[in-house]
Length: 127
Image (cartoon, rainbow, N blue to C red; front, side, top):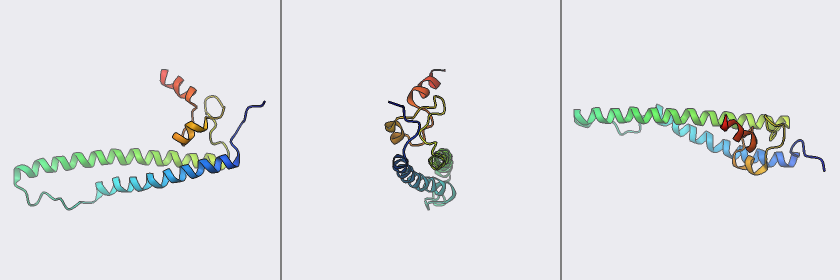
């Protein structure tokens, strides 16, 4: 029996639906992180004593830095999902970029933007 070279159109459609759902959620999460950086939530330091004001401003800055890092990470995830959609359109989705073989459906369902099979990923980690 010959080994499959690519996923069928029906299988690609299944993966596309998974990716679109994840992409929608990722964009909503990104907006939440972005808004927490750019907007004040009303918990201002105007009504506190000077000692607590310094502490609260420091905590707010730290919180914005963390939100910024999370937003950057989320944006990268969105870009990976969008690239996976392009691979679906090109019918190259699910092909390991190291081995050229199909990535297992189980892996793609768990990590739909994966470009490496588990075997190739393990080899990469060992290096």
